[in-house]
Length: 153
Ligand code: HEM
View 1 (cartoon, helix red, strand yellow):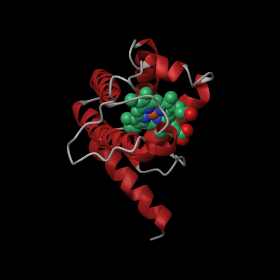
View 2: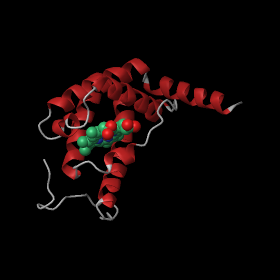
View 3: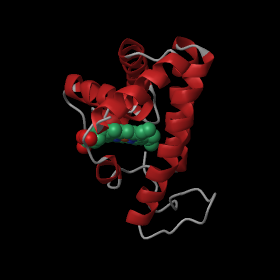
């Protein structure tokens, strides 16, 4: 079996187990970012940087296809994109809250759990990356809180 065939098999197994499809991913991504854009805490961080949402949404569909279905559709460097953002634990918590609410609204429980488990792991690693970019080494389980002086909206 080639690598590509093995990957297709893994994807088929995940689809059979979770019911996740590309259509479900597209629906989740669009509904989630509609909430994000209206959110007073994290909306402005996105609006300040994303002027054309269509390519971003397409990128996020590819990302979630890679993460949730192991399709390898996404080729990017999320850590590099997030390290300079003015965000900390509060922003990540809000992001996860909106993501989890959207996933549970739109997906069957097994699929929602599959997405949210991965989102939590990735959010935690991005938070560590953002902290280390600011010279802060987090201990296991520690959260990144910016000081008042460096606080950002
Ligand atoms: C505090 C929460 C977050 C904020 C404010 C945030 C903000 C952003 C912004 C502004 C961009 C566009 C960057 C650019 O193109 O210059 C972006 C891209 C992206 N974000 Fe986030 N993000 C957050 C959390 C997350 C989490 C938890 C994930 C994954 C589970 C994620 C995945 C991505 C990906 C894959 C991209 C595309 C990177 C690329 O261009 O390849 N983000 N995010």
